[in-house]
Amino acid sequence: MTSPTDHVTDHPAGVRPAGEDLVGDDTTGTPPVTLGEPTSPARGPGRLLRILAPLVGLAVLAYLPYVAVELPGVLPDRVNGPGSLQLLATCLVVGGIALSYDVLFGRTGLLSFGHALFVAAGSYLLTVSLSTWALPLPVAVLAALGLSTLLALVVGAVALRVGGIAFAMVTLAFAQAASIIVMRNPGGVTGGEEGRPLDRDAVPDLLVGVANAPYRYWLALALVVVTWVAVAVLVRSRAGHAMAAVRENEQRAAVLGFGTYRVKLLALVAGSFLGALGGVVHALVLGGSNPHLTTSEFTLSLLVMVVLGGAGSRWGALLGGVLYTYADARLVEVSNAAFLQGLPDVVRQVLSQPLFILGAFFVAVVYFAPSSTSRRRA
Image (cartoon, rainbow, N blue to C red; front, side):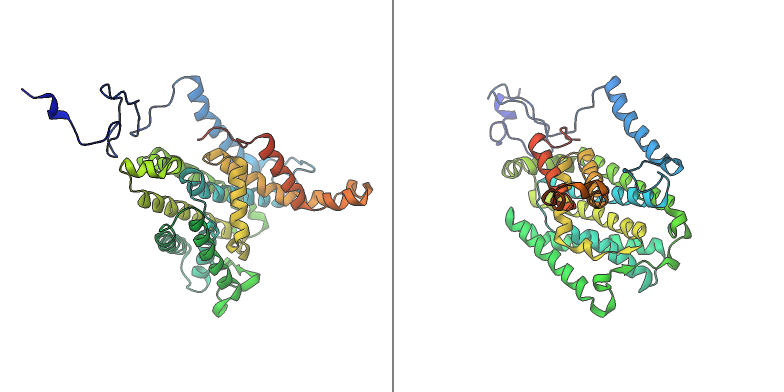
């Protein structure tokens, strides 16, 4: 017969190693804690709506290149016009990149100022692989993603030795170093301030030319779908639960048995890989690599997008990126609108600055909706 002490472990009250399901302890009065698999989502009409709504939205977005409707003041020309589709494609690409940054900031609590480094790495490595190394497009894409991931491993291995603001400063240092290299244009590889154009002979004809704007739009939409699904799978996995534990309380996660360094490194590499994928698509959609991608300003913009939409929310980060990019592009036209000419000089000069309008909008959102535009973590 077993004695009552046969089942006694050396774990502190209420604490179990990582990987075990934690349940309530009647002997200690410890409240139940769950770190295992997520519970199944609620069934019923609500769950059906959550499944159908994204699919319907995706179908609508995919159909936009067939919509010949003009929206004055909203889009440059008709919905399926080249200018409108290019603007929408750019918004979708940046939205996907913002979603990749949310893996670090919103999901793991890592404030990185170097995410632009990996986005730019994906973009520049693609254009260099196509033109300088003369690689076929599929091989060039794999090379860009592989080398960008390796770069993320190196940067993460160094930067994650410190935490908090020190981590942010180390990532900023790496990003600034990369930006200087790109601007110096060593060996004529990066193109300096002019950027690196895409070798049109190395990409399919469907991605080249004004008439093929719908295909570039669909490519950008595919990026959003792939990134959204990848993040959804990640956050629902055990690794995603470990990332959430690190975000909420890193010391407690370490006590529970999580390897916090490995968890943070995984988050940085995963987010950087998706960011590099966004950089690859960015180069294909915009026809080349832009040095703006290497700047800390771009990373700060990603931070604003995620905060604006809602950190830790897939829909929030995506919508924040789309809305920020759209506003940044369209406010230039608003600032030059004819109705501003009749206003007093003081008002007109202020409203003619797109960054002022965008900043005022951001302050208003933070003040009136402190939980951001997306209140629910998804």
